[in-house]
Length: 129
Image (cartoon, rainbow, N blue to C red; front, side, top):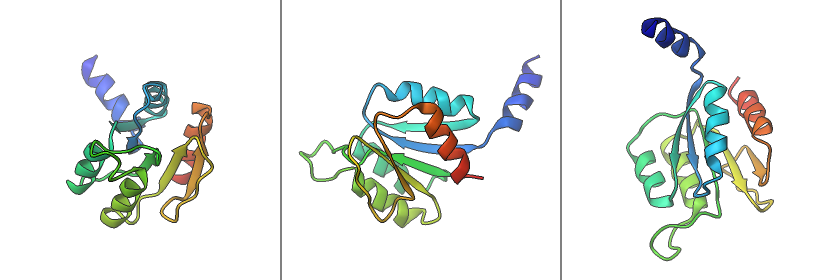
């Protein structure tokens, strides 16, 4: 039974998503993405997100809250994470998630908070076809 479960999970796997957001409410977003077949690497601060990206690990899409700041009194923010992602992984699409309608050149789209997780999953599926 265990082996069968493993095979089933592997056939539904759609790829790794990097989520960068400090909100505890993202737990539901992570669950929704996982139910849709994605593995989610959730980073809750700028420093750990940039460190993860610099390790060269491959992910298919990045969801980044650009209003997020670092632990060094605002030296870096979510836009720096987006820039680092594009620098290291230029082919990886970025979706900005923010409470504001902000556009940055690195992003393919902006999802303004508060959004329905089903809408986010739909957009992610469309982008990663």
